[in-house]
Image 1 (cartoon, helix red, strand yellow):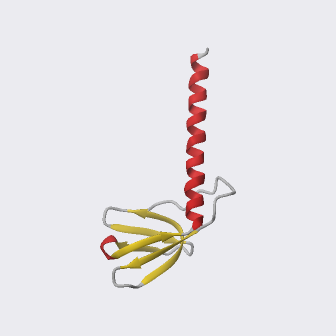
Image 2 (cartoon, one colour):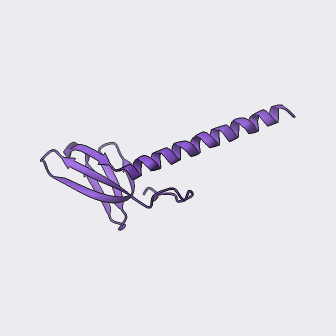
Image 3 (cartoon, helix red, strand yellow):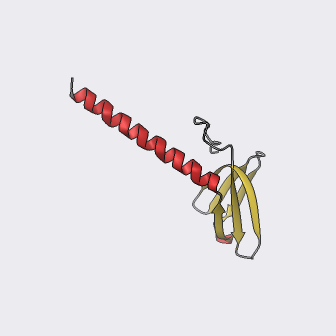
Length: 96
């Protein structure tokens, strides 16, 4: 099982939308709490706590909304901050 979104930043959305377009021409839109791409399957949990599995071979296209882009941006920002803090700590150790 994979975790729900971590809310350690108040800018982080509570959920995000994903639209799955299938090879048969149909589509579904979901409000997600979290998703995971496995080897042959797209696994996700909706904000209503319902688990879904979609075989990748049935999918034509997947679209995420802007809230997902915001989540990616915030996570990248936090990673950069952590790397910078680690570099500064390392430099401080060298200066002692």
